Image (cartoon, rainbow, N blue to C red):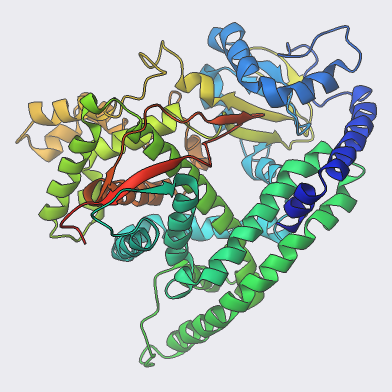
Length: 547
């Protein structure tokens, strides 16, 4: 945050620094050979121009949308790969969608998602200790525990949703008020995520939430700016740019270390003597899962309290920002839709009916039946996703990678991906792709259920049409829906996120009136990232009888 403040206070100094970086970068990259196949066509790069690749690299900041569409239309749709110049300098081989299975089936010793994420997130500098993104032990903890513990976390999640919306959106049933959507969603998701990660009361501590948010901004600043400079400067600038993050981490650990040490003592005591009486039950949260998984795997380094406090950083960064971006887009899409479509009324009916059916106690089984809500979320993730490419991999094999049918070869260090944005907006796949149709995916599922009402569950499960309907769920990935990636490295937290977002949407439609927006606020493209309007507000009022 301090780095961002410095830039805002001294804009001319910042511009001068960037210009120097640009000049040096042009000199270095203009004469160097990129780690990509020379025989593949580029989008955006004009042959014969001086520093043609460098020009294309920087023009991609404003031309990414146009070039992705061009690449998909000319090449991807026709089963051909192409090269995309990225401002980070990590130029990508963009595969056609029909090569998705080939890419995801490649062994991790050839192409690696973790290596790609490590580079994008500046793993050497951004998270206080490069061991975090090298070991990715936090991913193992999530894989092993989260999906199996979803039911146990639902009551706490619903409690935090209720408490946070009461605090942030308010309980006034008489007058509408403006709520800056992005800021309020970030605050809600930060509390909700930390309820799962660190539990009560820390998830509501304003200082902890503030410094955690500052750390995330430090990472975003570093990840965004560092690639703009030549590689020979990055080790120096990376260490300097990481200093604000180290400071904010030090402030977060003042809150987390006492909790971690007490939890370690409690779990160790119970392991030694199961009859030990504790002051309170051990919570089902990330800290508990981390400790138990590290004990079971005999990983003493990962049981160090300081290391556990560091591991909280990447999971918070990933979970909070991606979920907040998704929820902001969902609410913008829903509340800018034509009121005659009755999306809100239909979602409210579904949520109210199922909430009453479970006597106000959500379960995984009940949430799974929220077909309309599931569809509204999936449709928003299709049309308004913050990411443009999916299934990004880095080639790590010293022998490089050879394509089996196109016969191009790329060396170690290359990046390979699929164009998610163009697939999600292809009219051949999704009719009227630029229209947000909240029930695009639930309509056929509800029709199927009505047609087979009363059918035997076991018999139904063998019906190919039933399996096709199941594939319309927001957590199901495939060639035509890549919001969570695809294959064995698809987002491990997506099943939890599914229930989290369903409960939030259900809470909003059941408890608030929201004025319809005259039009959908425009999202901003910056390179290959898409962000919703951070300044736009919703006018909200608590519904009578819900306080």
